[in-house]
Length: 351
Image (cartoon, rainbow, N blue to C red; front, side, top):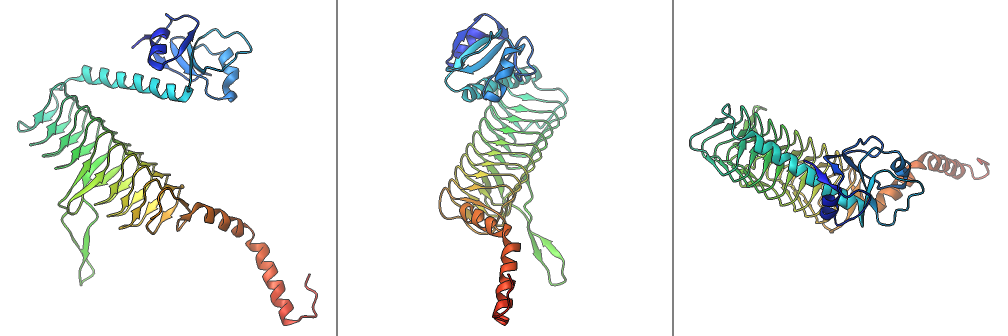
């Protein structure tokens, strides 16, 4: 896909300085970009590169004032990072559409005759679509993906290669499921027996993923024991996350890599959860909660918009105060010993 600087400026609401007809086909880093690429200047740290970049077009803020000649065409915008996000999404969507339109339905895909396939659906080679599965209009199912019996994939949802959507699970519209995601694996449910063994408890629920959700590679979302494990609209999950049975993740909550969420925990809307956070089960996390990396969340968070961190996690302000005290522990220990010695012998000088 090629776009002119004039078309890009119209897309981004920007103004042009330079050649409006120059064409670009992809984005690039300002220090590495080549002719035919568009780049951006978002931080003063990179200003030096705008004078040497080979990029054809550069996004800059409206108040940028060059101190040397710039060979690239400039597009001035109000918000460079906002415009960049819009630009990347435009190129990314075009790439997905090209791939989907090119692929069609592979003759090497295994599609059960009782599956329901909508219009303009693409299915890659060696994908498996089981009986009763529903692929709504505009879906893309990558190579070697698996769509289980009675699973539903919403309109314009993109399933990357190797993802597994198991039986009865439902995925909404415009979702992105990355490679090797497993949705609908059994929840971790076992009943201890008198002889010390464990009896498996059947997991009879499903996973419900609402619209506009993105799930990163190798993340696993277990089906509910009864009812549904739910990922609400607009949530974004990174790679390598474990979501246990009957968990609920609220609308527009973002979760970074390597987070583990134990069963029946409910996470509110608009939460921000950093990497390697661990949650015990059966707790509730209030809307707007921010949780710092590697925190261990062992109790419910009841107050909205709280920031917590540490292990076990507690409020950010208390954590910082505690950390300041922790660094002084050797000094405080010496003072305590001096006081103890002085109490034993008030005449002794221990200073």
